[in-house]
Image 1 (cartoon, one colour):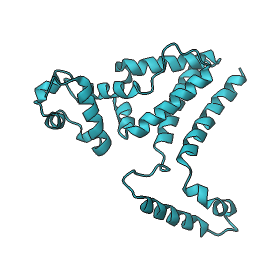
Image 2 (image 1 turned 60 degrees about the horizontal axis):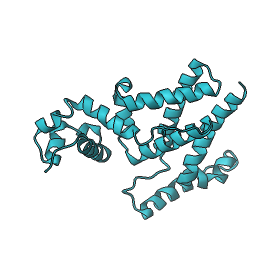
Image 3 (image 1 turned 60 degrees about the vertical axis):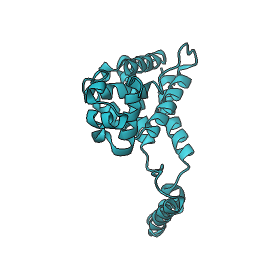
Length: 216
């Protein structure tokens, strides 16, 4: 094979991490999969910690702010959050990668973090509030992306339909006199449109930020 690139290593690491979890991502495993010796990988990443940092940078590049973006802060925060959710959903291991790294060692993460703080500050929030907003946006995106409303892609439509049917029946079987709203809303309680789940979740979080900003 030709010269091994850092991007090729990272892409294979993400494939393994998404399919088998980060514990399965090792230098030896990557070397075997890529048909090289472990030393060829050490040329790019001295250890797994550095590899994770490289993986994080690659992931963040997928939702980083666009250059020369002069849109209102509300639009830019929404765009960032939506692209972050798409990245997290496309890579099941992304959440663990972002949790395991030292974020200050990832320039791409620092750039996004700094830009988000600046947007919050431009909306009139204090430094303390701006820091909290960045944390809420990240955790909110992780929660939305990790929602059970998105069934495992390995399940067949028939399996998904049966899971939904059983869950719905369980709620509809509750005493209607004690839990009238649960029984009446059993359908949307167990199955929402994935698109609505995502967009409404983002709307809910950002509406709170905008409402607070309006009070400034």
